[in-house]
Amino acid sequence: MDDQPDPLQPRRALPGVLDAARAAAVAARTILDAGGGTGRYAVPLLRPRGPRVVLADRSAEALLRRPAAVGLMAVRTDLDGPWPFRDWTFDLILAVDVLPHLRAPEGFVDEALHALTPGGRLLVATESPEDLDARPLLKFFPALREMEKETTPEPGAIAAAMAAVGFPAVRVDRVSGDSPLDRGAVEAVRRREHPGLELLGDSDFRRGLRGLEAAAAAGGLRASWSRTLLLARRETPSDAVVVVAAVLRAAGKLLVQRRKAPGPLRGTWEFPGGKPEGAETDEQALRREVREETGLEVVPGRLLREVLHAYPNKLVRLRFYEAALADGSRLPRETRDLRWVTPADLAELPIPPANRDLVRDLAAGS
Image (cartoon, rainbow, N blue to C red; front, side, top):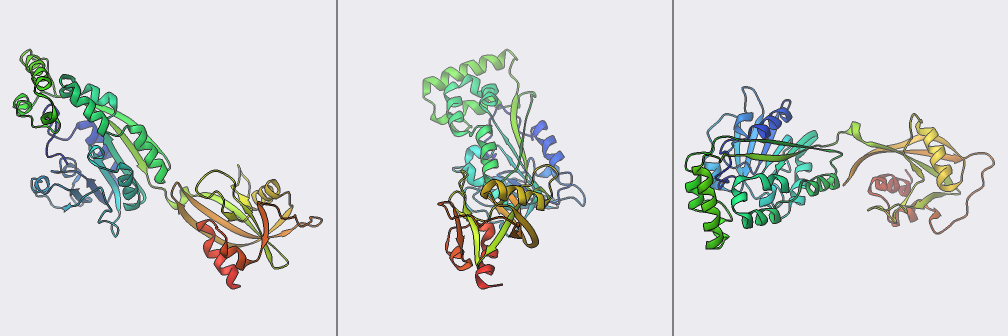
């Protein structure tokens, strides 16, 4: 998507961005440069016996201008919809100056998550409002700067989208630099060879061009740039949040409670339990959680099942234990949010996705 770059920005890969890409690619075997156009970031990442690099862009013209290189594959695709990489996985996905060109940046982030290997990384380079204010071209054309700000998602919104789809943490950095202006840069502006310049009124354009020409004639104009980098990593099974749950039976029925905490699982019926705290064992956590949630004292039994489930915002390792009432404990009365149900009835209630296989097997009598 770099077929019409800012004439006052370096035409080569920005050094700070390329350094971050190289650092993220150290152990990568497969890399996707999403929206990489002519390959100015993809090609420098190639090395002997190095990674396979896929260059994906919607512009056939930009892809045709890529250099021929061993290990580089070009794919023409629209990154605004479902990606054609569902059967592929990547250790690193780069997205440099891509998100402003997309209709749905949130969808892009979600597609990226599912295209990464466990532990794989997504590196996004974009411009914050402060980065846009520092761009020389936009200093002379303030109306264009406002257009760019309207179409460029802020880094905070991108980080929030990453967290929402399931990236556990996002690291944010900023890099900047400058270099001598490319020959013909001012002439390219005169020809309006930048998206948006053609939308300016003649008076706004002439005013900005006069200021640009004066600065260039005085020798005070350089190709300065800055970018905000967002680096996120897909979770691995070792990152999963551990949750323990008690499958408590009495008179052929199971004790379940309705989830009241805010979130997408609110209102679902689940087995009592929760997360171990500190150095608690599963059994200690199970006793404490059931006591806090129901007032019951239970004795944990054997592990029935362990499930690794990826929810949209986190990876959960859920351990279901058989449990029995401790001596002296009475069966609790049913309330609006606490029920005794048969396995068959439970299968008909709304339940968390991670519980479905176990509930199905309990209903089948296995």
